[in-house]
Length: 165
Image (tube, rainbow, N blue to C red; front, side, top):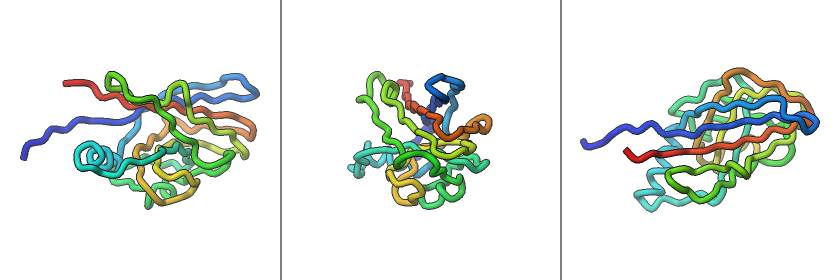
């Protein structure tokens, strides 16, 4: 068998605003589960169906993402949070350039509607909070839990970079 292993994944940058003031900012590397990797490879090389829009969600359980995670089980295991306005936020990226795909400059934004502790985030193919449909592209556990209050705004930038070898 001819193959090579290339670790691939997103880096997330979270910003936490309260009353319009930035009070916290941090970046963390994710885990890209096999479901996301397989989807990416199938679209690239096997005429797999592209996803029209990706969405970012937040979770609250003390859960470390696993390579075997899928959208069928992830929202329940990770404890997807629903205490923010609207559906999962749209991941709007610019066209890839020099091996980088990112939503920087068009960050996903969450307006928190109830006090809650956030322990991670994820990128999924389905917009509805709590949905187990679709593809789990990426998931990340924060280095430490963050508590958000009603009215806080959280922005999330996520990017993927692949370098030539």
